[in-house]
Length: 115
Image (tube, rainbow, N blue to C red; front, side, top):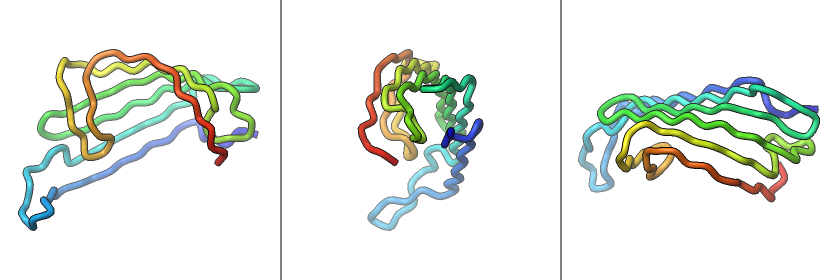
């Protein structure tokens, strides 16, 4: 039994930014869109592609490819290999995903918690 849908789309619209002193801040990136597509599903894992986009001043785009293994009735695999690419050569601070550096990254992610 697979717990993940073949496609997921997340959309956040943030028309106003504020500062904690009560003033209005300039709009950082008012629209955030993320997608996740399952490309191939096997008995113990899957291959998925993700995209993340922020639209507005200083837009940002990121594309990722994940190989998730050892799923065992979980929404995400316990052992994940990934490659991520974001065009550009600067640092972005995102209200949705935190601080990010443009470029290419590869890594391993381990998940220990059951869902």
